[in-house]
Length: 443
Image (tube, rainbow, N blue to C red):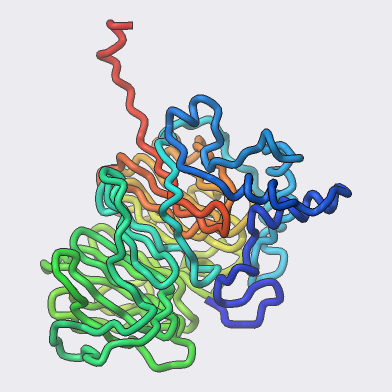
């Protein structure tokens, strides 16, 4: 992740950094020569409620936006967003170059159907380039960042609870070698990972905070580095082939560190020539995909960190990667507005180049059965590709707002999307569609 100055963005995702729906409505109205939004209209826009699947089928907007009372249609506002949304690039015009060379894959897939939009849950983003802040550990359990808090949402009980609050003092209740026993104050959480019974939160100053979900308190606190360029960009929790649970931290100090989740000891520290924005480990745990502030990615040996091959094709910096469960296919997401799919056995040319609508690819998730790949842009669009159709067919999930993260439940039955917006912040839930052929005889 680059820390070069950016005119349009600050490093922190403050209110003024990203498009807000109500502000956009005001600007659009002014451009059309209309008056600024009045109190009644503002109250109408901001008085939003949850949306159920039944209400959506009856015509209600999934986000509760009252288009019938606005001076612009949803279709026209979509056109405006596509025209005006500014994709952040470290390499100028990288997205424009892709737009000229690459066509989008066909829409028409219908793999997940809208189930519920929850307004009680308000996801947030710390850094505009880091969007891995939503994790589902089951079809009904979701963990996410909301300002300084790690929150747990249960879709069964509709209960939202605070798990950790980093606005004050957080310190470990267990003693482990290397742990900072005095803990941290006012930690700004830049990235998150939750799997099974484990949670790891990464901070803007290289902080790592580890927690077991079945225990009170925090298990471990440490700093990966005291370098000025210390932000934790990505985390991954995974089963080790040697037994136990490990996690990997990718940092802006050009380092990738592997830890044991039982003893919380540092097992490996690999260094690279550029800041590492994301890593993902292959299903057999032999290879690591490493992407960062460079046009090329790397495949490296997980045991010694040595480069096995370079991943060449993107035109800008990459911030996402993921492995298909078959262990041969992996994908990378880039600020050139593409997700590229690669075969590790013949790495020369991507097997698919998948172009987004308006911005960088910030998150990628494969379903556990390998049938789908979920790709999130920074705002408004999540694409679900059918891997069995060679990524040539996709479902496009369309809404308005910045995306804080996407997550499939481990059984692939639910897809959660965190939306950051001052007015319409929420958690979208889509459920996997099923074809029950045995019911046809009753129709």
